[in-house]
Image 1 (cartoon, rainbow, N blue to C red):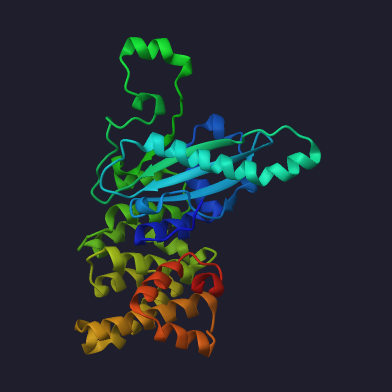
Image 2 (cartoon, rainbow, N blue to C red):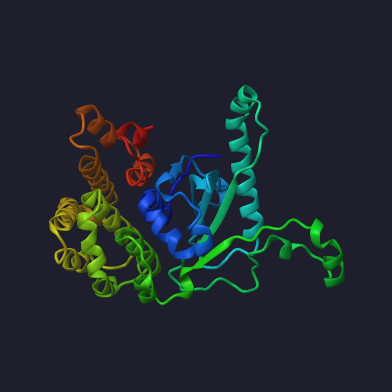
Length: 338
């Protein structure tokens, strides 16, 4: 297990889906009823860290939840694939990540089992891959969701070895295969629906201001969420990072939402205005990023100590970029600056 280093897609995904109610709405919409009926949803608890190899974190994001299945300990592992094409070896990667989860579980349970004398067992892991791309490239039918299908065997040999081949089939939610409007029929939380839609339609979209008008109801619903200002700032940060829509077009949309959305767009606009004529200069752009980060930190964690503000303004741009990503998912100021 390792800590996550985020890109914009990953940061937005983790910010939204780390909330159990948001994750549960996606899981209930995708998992078979025979599984959802057995899961203890109130016990759903986010686990720390990431299992994705550092070299692959620009392509995948992951979250692990612990729960109970028919009263037994269990995990649900969600992997978001946000590259332009599906991964032919995803079944093998999921096996690797699941083995890592089991190893960690056994390490945590070893002392308890020694004390109680209980026999060690492995918990069930429900593996889900969410495939979502701006290009709308569907999951390739040539890429199996069953691990055994990756093994190079003739049909006769496969039949002979049948029970001796490793088998693992992950669940696949191919968002890229859906018309975005099909997501309206899912019983999702507004934050989850907005996430899945924007990751599909926002990247490199110069007409995003117009396209977002179809989703005003869900965007407005963020106002009644647990952290409306933080949610709107997260959405704006994501849109301004991956999209090609002007700030004016985005402001037109956000002004039709609630007071927290307007506060978020005003905060962002003030930072953009502060860049002024220096926007085209590297130094001016860097200063703008620093001031935007300070505004985001203040909105999320409250008034900042003077020493923290000085530390941020004195940091190099590499560290500013790291903090700008961490501010979206960190729960405390110390966690963000660690």
